[in-house]
Structure formats: structure tokens, C-alpha cells
Image (cartoon, rainbow, N blue to C red; front, top):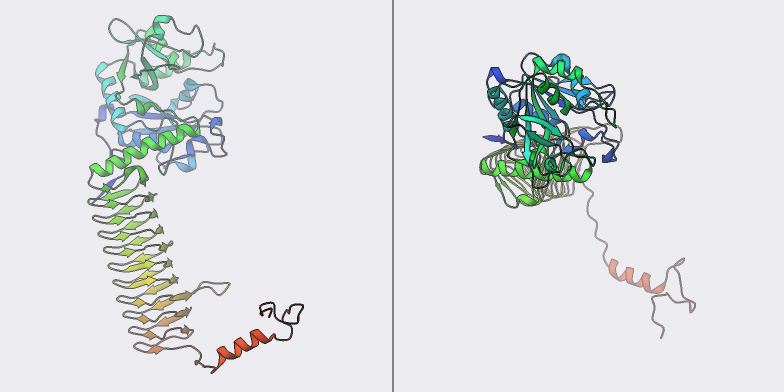
Amino acid sequence: MTRPGLVGASSSISIGAVTEPVVVILAAGTGTRMRSRTPKLLHSICGRAMVAWPVAAAVAAGASKIVVVDAPGEPLRAHLDDDVTVVTQQQSLGTADALKAAGEHFGSGSVVVLYGDVPLIRPQSIVSLVQAHAQADGAATVLTAVLDDPSGYGRVVRDEQGDVLKVVETKQPGDATAAELEIREVNTGIYVFNAATLGSALNQIGNQNVQGEYYLTDVLAILRADGHGVGAFRLEDTLEMFNVNDRRALAAATAIAQRRINDAHMLAGATLIDPAATVIDADVSLGEDVTIEPGSALHGHTTVGDGSTIGPHSTLYDATVGANSRVIHSYVTHVTIADEVNVGPFSYLRPGTEMHDGSKAGAFVEIKNSEVGERSKVPHLSYIGDATIGEDTNLGASTITGNYDGYDKHRTEIGARVHTSVDTTLIAPVTLGDDAYTGAGSVITDDVPEGALGIARSRQTNIEGYAAKARLKHTAGEPGQALGESGESDHAGAG
């Protein structure tokens, strides 16, 4: 059994067909404060592009359609799923203008407005906002929050009935009265509108302000003036309104998301020995009774089965690990590891590697694009590349597959129950049949038949008295050897 890394991010929350909204995500900002060649919304938070977080929340909240408002050139499109509709805001003329760019997709129900740089909004908060809006039967509902320090945020002014009278901006002196500045309830910038009245209100907005932009907050006043109700729903967790504008905020958002992910895994039955020293991406899945040791990082779509242990200090990218396996002090990328497999310490498993049930990759082993059969072992100090290994085979220390001739890669085929002795080099293409052996120190260039012993090495020669001859040569000084001024070797005594 595996569970998603972020609760609610990959499974839909039912809110009923009547309230299934169109979700519009405003994502056309340039993000200059990031000081990066990468568009702001493509910076990663726990393995996901920033813009993918509100998209995932909208999906989990049961959105009937998701529309992302992109900048000219649509830099985000290639990073979004095909079922996300992308429209373009041709000029940066404010939030209302951005929403207007998505007008043809509003439909006839409700429209939720989110932001690409507000990545921590939870699906349940979207659902609760939409449900509150449906119950209030108004034209708009504002998602608000109460802050201890509301400085810089627009204040929500309510009427005697508790409906939203207006949102007062506070960025410039004189924008708000002293009484309004005392209000601690602020506008998060997230709304739900009735599609039937939204389009008309957007068309009435003016841009008579210093920036010359069209502000979405003006829609609320227009709706009120037209006799429509504007409600408010209060956000419980104010971290959900966290806005990312620079790399400090990106790091802070990542830390919050990481805590959520780790907490969700622990509540689902995984043990994280030191959560603060554990990195787990949003799309990682962990089974029950998985143990993650400190210093480990699980990235991408890594999956770890029940009862397995990762770490300490292991890194996995897009890896699949079965049940009851161990990956210790190792680096694993785009690899499939089956059940009851032992990897490490200090192993490097590269793309295309498959470790079958009960197999082993031991200390200082590198395996690339190879299949290691059931219960087979590559215990230590070996490189296995472009090879197939049958079941119950044992490769001795320093077994090397010479798979590259300088131009092309070639495969090595190793059968079942094969035993290579230490320091065996297999020059591909070559095949070792079932039950074959190799002698220590062999360089195998030809196939070894089933059940045979392959030995490929020079005969040993012992030179008697070599040590004494070497000492004499060293002390006497050979022609061409550097001598001191006395004519003796630099290493000779001075007496």
C-alpha cells in the first residue's frame, strides 16, 4: 500500500456537482524580484513547479475546469497537464485584466480565482470557500484572514449584516482611515464569483489609479452597487495565503510545504527518524512501516513499498523500491528495486537498472542499464553496465563489464548460478553460460560455456634474488641516475 506525499493533492474532495467551480489561476506576472532566467512560477517547491501547486489543489477540490492565465509567449504551457486550459494576458494591466482574459471559460456556475505564486492553498479551503459561497447565495465571496500584523494588506470592511462592504487598500498614506487601519481582517486576494455577474462587473472596472491598472478588488464595489451581496469566508490557516515574490519567500514556502508532506507521511504510517533532516518531494509515495533515516532525499515520483528502509544519507530520483528493501548511503536514479533487496552502502544505481527480488548491490558498486536477477549479488567494488545477470549469481569483488569500445555500447550476458572470482573483467559483447566460473584476475574476451571455468591471464614468473639486485642498483648509481657532487648518489651516506 502506498500513500501520496501531500494529503489531498492527488485525490479529489467531493463537493457536489452544483458547486463544482471553474478555477482561474492568475499566473502572468514576470517575477523580477526572483532575479532568475527561469520564470518565477517554474521555480520548484518540493519537486513541483510553483504554478503546479494551486493547479493540484484545484484538481483535488473537484474543479470542473482549470484555466491558467499565462504571460505572452506562454512559458508555463509546456509545464502544465494537457487538461489545463492556458490563456494569455497580452499586457500586464492588473489582476482584473488578467481574469478578464479567461472570460470565455467562466461557464455558468461559480468561478474561483487563485494565484500561481500563492502555492500553499489547500484543497479543503477551496472546497469550504465554494460551499460557503453557495450557501450565502451572493454574487461573490472573499476569502479573508485575521492577522496579528495586517500591515500592507487590504482591510476588509463589513456592513452591519456582516457582508463585505468594501476592501480598503493601505499601501499609500491616506488610502485608509485610522479606524480602517485598526481592522485586522484582510483580503487574501482569493475569491469565488458567480459567473453570471462577473463578466459584466469586469467590463465596468476603470484604471484611474497611479499604476493605470485594473484591480480585481473593484469588482466587489461594482457588485454591491448593482445590488448584489458580497460575503466573506475566513481562512483558518493563514500560511495558506503565503505569497512568493523572491527566493527568501521561496525557501520559506518550501519549508512549510516540506513540513506538511513529512507530517502527512508520518500520519499515514511512515517513520521519519529526523523530519527536519529529510527531504521528500510532493509526488513521492511511501508505504506503511517505511523508515526514512536522516539525511535522505526522495525526489520526483519515487515510490517506496511497505517495510523498506531508506538511508541514512540516501538520494532517490524517480525510483521504485519494493517491500522490505534497504537502500543505505547510496544514490539511486530512475531505477526499479524489487522486494527484499539490499543496496549499499555507497552504491550508485543509474538509469535502466532493475534489481530483482532478494538481489544485492553492495559497497562501492555502480550499476547502469542492467538487470540483476533474483537473489544475485554484486557485493563490492564492481562496475556493471549494460548487462543481464541471471538468478543466484555471485560476482566477485572488482568484477567489471567493459561495455564501451570507444564508439558503441555492448551487452554482457551472465547466466544463472554464475560465480566470477575477484578482479574479473568481462569485455563485451560476451556471454557467461549458466553455472559458469571465472578465475581470479581474468580478462574474459570470449564466451564461457555453461558449467565451464574461464581463465584468461598470463602465467606467473618469479625472479629469484630480485630484491638484492634492486638494492645494489639503487646504492651503486646506474648510468643516467642523478649523482651528488662527490660522485655518490644523493641518498648515499656522507662518510
